[in-house]
Image (cartoon, rainbow, N blue to C red; front, side):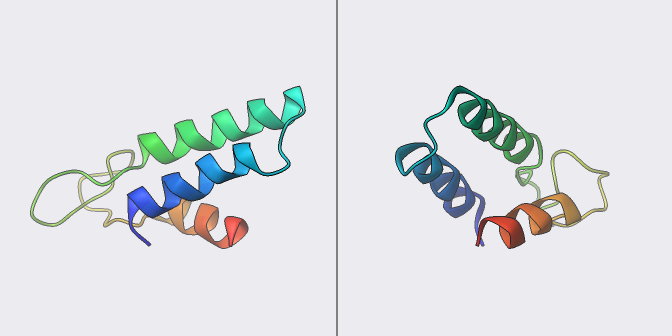
Length: 69
């Protein structure tokens, strides 16, 4: 999954049924995690939140993708 696709899923969570204050805080936390772990713009496309050798999607993004699907 591309980073833009993951962010679109997170944005949809806000629109469909996640309206309580605590839910909105959780969505914001998930969005911030996804932004930290977005791919760098280097040739290897490594994770921006992990080491320079961790390819995107890193384990953190893989967990988010699994839980949001």
